[in-house]
Image 1 (spheres, rainbow, N blue to C red):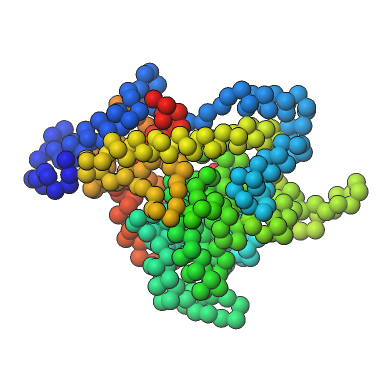
Image 2 (image 1 turned 90 degrees about the vertical axis):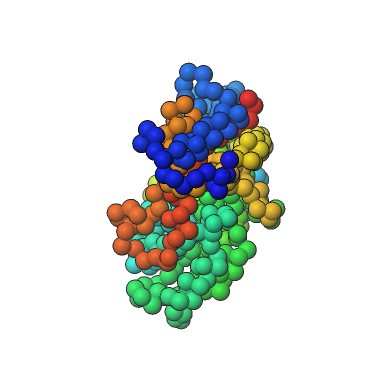
Length: 406
Ligand SMILES: *Cc1c(COP(=O)(O)O)cnc(C)c1O
């Protein structure tokens, strides 16, 4: 079946068109052929996986008594992150949103500034901008990769940007444009060379939201090591989890030291005196969470391998169906955090969501784009037609690593 093979007659059965019902049945069948039927509970969108090491490290942490803000698992977790990604510095924090907030502060974003942000992202990206007192300025996505479109961004900045001695300004709002945030959507790497070139062209720092892309690479280099600084998430639904948690990565050791200082209340060594030299945050990751994280980090390469195999299985199952699968470009490898398909339109998307969830496969639509949310509705933005089109047609499929073992 493909988009052209059936009539657009608009015949309706059970409240949806025949065509939408056909797409629903095609997707349900393809998903079933890859991950089997649910036995009892529905098949989750993304489930964490724990083993013996997780139990042992957490037990050891509890036994030691060092469950809170001090302990060796935090150091070990940070070292494992550096080793895996090649980052010069890694700082473990309470969650991915907090990581992004501190990243923005560290690159010099101030209250009243604007930050260029994709509209197609999870709420945390835009919230982090607001926490810093800044205003998100939404930009469109590349239809192939779903991340910020460098060509469209460059044209937009050429139109609305004005260069002044202290930086780039938005000629329409009069506000400084202080940074560009880029997010690797569903684990698929953005076109980092092109985006870095735009950031350099306009003299703004690039911040990576790598929350979904641990283990993904662009031109052989790990996501989270591009731009000036990056935020990662270790929430329960991400590729590896610390329960809740996040990390800041950077190739700049001085910036990493600043990140550590700011996220640990900005306390300076002064014997037993409490001396803090600026307003910092209590954003550190508890040792108990880091213990779980150390065990999870040992498994990340295995998770990524399984998730890539699962993605390949989905790709084959959808090959002749006319359903488009989000697939990595030749310059990148994706961790396939969430497998993603595109339906022809919103109606078939909705029919697919209903049919698959009714059958016990937990699928979900894309996020509401940021510029459609009430608190961000009045923010500055470029044309967002690619985002509008994509969010109406995307469905995410169950993507737990264990589904590759069926
Ligand atoms: C998960 C996620 C975050 C951070 O989320 P936390 O729940 O705060 O750890 C940030 N950005 C994106 C795109 C995410 O998917």
